[in-house]
Image 1: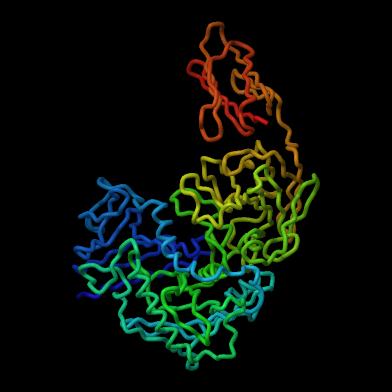
Image 2: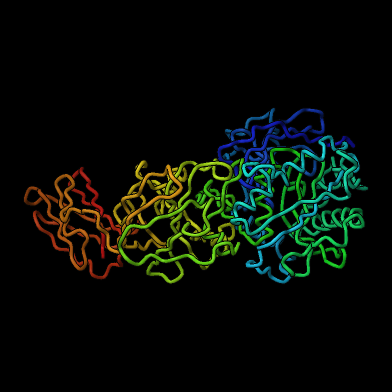
Length: 603
């Protein structure tokens, strides 16, 4: 059987945003059974990955022929076609972006997480102290020896010669406000600068999916048990290889939960091609019982050696998972609730901070979040540098939802990759833990960041989310773009304005519990006027038209639903809106071939 060679091309390490753990467009080179070379890309995260070409046409492995072919979507499943990438064009037959549904991806995630729930829940507020992270190197049977010296890995994990060094140690220390310190230790102890790795008994094909070309691969099915069995058995063998070299005096359970805190397994090899376990991920060793000095091994990070996904950014993201932090990206193919503003959604390199709310809820690194209730000027200090004064809360009519304000300053070492500096305004929904397991009907998120053009219907521009005197985002109220809406579209009535400049370590802003932005009582659009605005029980629509001219109107809510409709007369028309829920509405007024739209607020 021809060995399936898999090489990842050298890619640039972005200082702008790439996806954390959720890797996008990683270049991959495959060799087909006939010897042809296929250049494509891999995208995915810990739980689900797929191949595609540069135009985003999906590629899968045909298990019958062993060829990688273009995929079609039939009854919700990806199925192979007879179109071979590099030979056949999919453009007249297939659509780009074909993939299984977000709901099915979530189910895959849930199946992988079932076993992890067997462990007692972590006490997230014990994320304080010094954690010893164990690092074990693995070579598969047919893999080359590690060529990098141990100093290369030590730099990524432990470099603290200056506070600006980009290492896991410095990142966790900075992000936790010097409350948590992670020191990584390599076992077996290296021979000088030479890595001592566990050499496995199986080759790379054993850890890849089965096909006619790879008859020792694992079978893919809904249970994924065979993949789990092989991965966990591999890691058990690696732990048993290294365990005797780990000193019994080393504290491996800093949070006192009875488990080894974390192990980072570094595998000498490249990215798996399709739905492969050979992909960076964080998981738990729930199907095998293996111990180090009486403590059961549980949390681990599984990492490959290519620098595209073995860097401080990915390692820090995975460690925050170990500390209880959730993913903030969605599995839907539309919508970016957080994006590059948080390492748990889309991380840059060097990695950026996680949000102040997550630091409070999951890290326990902020004691409390003060709530703003009275009008006045307030000061925020930068998220990266200040534990106190870095976050405020504003309540909403929904007890499960509120607004978070924090100051993000674009500066080294761990906020250099955010788009800009300013006040970030987030909506928090306490009914959810993270965004990756959101309700796929309504796409409710635990964290949503307001951004330019962001509405209930439109994703907007997540890179334009920083409010400041220097930004076109310098006011936030029910009439601005963006405006304060909740997950169901309810509009909240308060105002933020007079944001300061973002050049210092702090920024000021003004809060009013009542919108103070000047609004015209009469909105004039074309030949139509609407007043009062805001309105409570009744609106008047004034129309300048000829007698007998047919004029129609529709009142449309923020979800695009028509809530009232009818005909209008010339001049004043009185419409009862007392039964409408508070929020933003649009009056569409059709006058012959002309249609005017007027936005108004129902209080």
